[in-house]
Image 1 (spheres, rainbow, N blue to C red):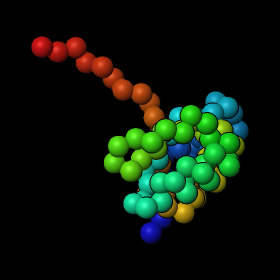
Image 2 (cartoon, rainbow, N blue to C red):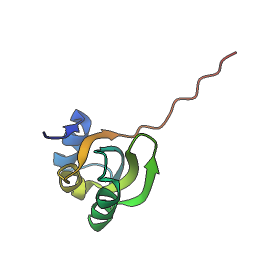
Image 3 (cartoon, rainbow, N blue to C red):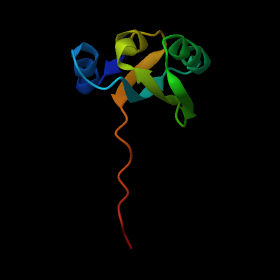
Amino acid sequence: MSAYVADEITALAHAEEGPESVNLLIGVREGHLTEVQHQARKFGATDVEELPFSSLHASVPRSSIVEICGLDGIESVELDEGMEILEGN
């Protein structure tokens, strides 16, 4: 089964211009977290941080997006657009 890759990630990967790096949220299949972290770093990912629910946050060079998305053990790749903090009660 291939990984879900958000449309904006695919567009960034194939764009001629854009940011040098992008912040990604990477969903990882159970048991593959350590290997995906290692492989992502080999492709230039920095600030690789383990998150809850078998996922990672990583800053990835735009030139390596295709390779990162193709890693064995990846379930999903989405753009990390940060969190919106809402004021409430």
